[in-house]
Length: 199
Image 1 (cartoon, rainbow, N blue to C red):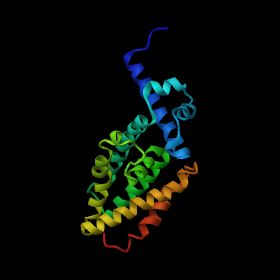
Image 2: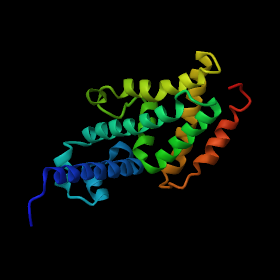
Image 3: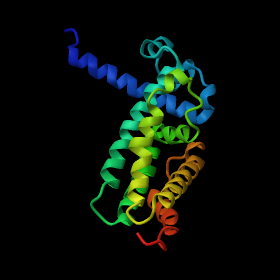
Image 4: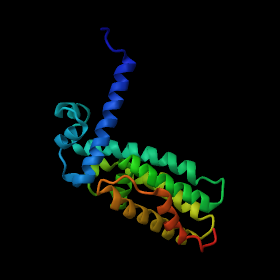
C-alpha cells in the first residue's frame, strides 16, 4: 500500500474537522456549553485524542465552528438579500433558506443564538471578530433590504423581529432533536405580518 498523498491527507483533515464540528453542534444542542470534549468525541465516533489533535479545548473548537457557520450564512444572505427582485420575494427566499440551513447545519442556528446573546458563552479573548462579522455580513444586510421600503429605525425594529422570531421558532424544533421543520410554512406565517406593509 502506497503512502497517502498530501491532497489525500488534506481531504482527511477537512473531513475530520467537519465531523468534529458537526458533533460539537449536536452536543451543544443537548447540553449547552457544559459539554466536555469527550462528549464531542463520543458523538463523532472518534477517539478522545483525535479531537484534541485538532482542538485544544471546547472554546477553540466553538470559535472555529462559529466562523465556519458565519461563512455559510454569509453566502446565503448575499445570494438572497441583494438587490434584484421584489422585497417580499427576497425576504421569503432568505427566511426559507435560513431555516433550511439551520436544519441541515445546526451550527449556523447556534451562531444566530449566540450572537443574540452577545457571544457571552465564549471567553472574551476568543470572541474576536465574530460580533463585527455577524453585524456586517448577516444583520446589516437584513436591515438594508428592509430599508428599501421603510426608514432605518423601522427597518432595524423589523429586522430584530424577523431574526428573533426565526431563532425562537427554530429553537423549539432543534433543541428537541427535530429537523423536520417546514421552512416554507414557517416563513409564510411569519412574513404574513409584513404583508400589510408596503414593500
